[in-house]
Length: 350
Image (cartoon, rainbow, N blue to C red; front, side, top):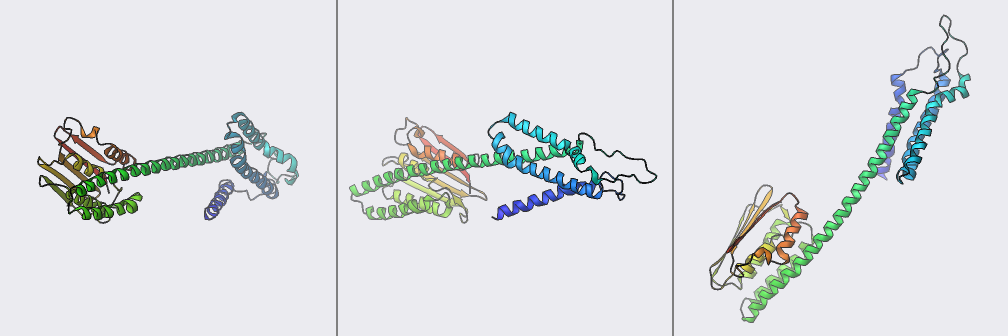
């Protein structure tokens, strides 16, 4: 309702300024005894002229364009506009023949008589008509284009949200499956860490089911979630594995897409752990003024003849797609997959 009121006020103000232009640039002469724009004649003509041009604006905008131009009936639209243009060009002459008696019949003493009849076609009226035509048609076409663009963006955004939801829905069971496998391994070996691992998993799944539904989450919670996951993984590791998890900077007040770092961390534990060889995993989170730098590196112990990026399933593939959708043109991702080492370097705005 407020928007409609504002539009009405703007239209009234615009027409008021437009209709006042003749008084500003062409003031009426003081001698009205023998003037083409005599008082009564001018007032009536001004009203007729104004009503026609205002009516044309709204008829063109709300009737002719929607009925003809929007349906690509260009010939009909052009003919109607030309007919109205010709009529408006002849309007002063038509009006003069109908109401010419409003003019005085005698010239002022000492002055030569002036031509009483206006020109056959009024060039001023044609200029006004064309200006209003261009303005009304242009405004309508631009508004329709903007509305179409907005609808296109809304459709694209809906598709984006649907795809992001689908990607997150894929990550959640994938993560749960891997974690349950780890707990199963602990239970099979009758590890004393099994109960604690279940509690950690409960905390992690609570985050996945609540916070991860949002488009963005506090960076602090995402870091805590990652820490819990690392602690859960440590319960099944031997002394051959070294985990170096370093956080630099203050995460307070920053936000990040949920579960964005998890696939890279999962990947390191999947391919970088060995019970016989030294297995260092180094994770760095560096929070700068307007960005987050994340890096993780590990040795490769399984399938060393193959590329990890060819065997990671949906994890890293989904993450790349989510980065494209969420941070298009604003992120840097470098994956260095060597024969014996694997590293990821990611920089995103936060």
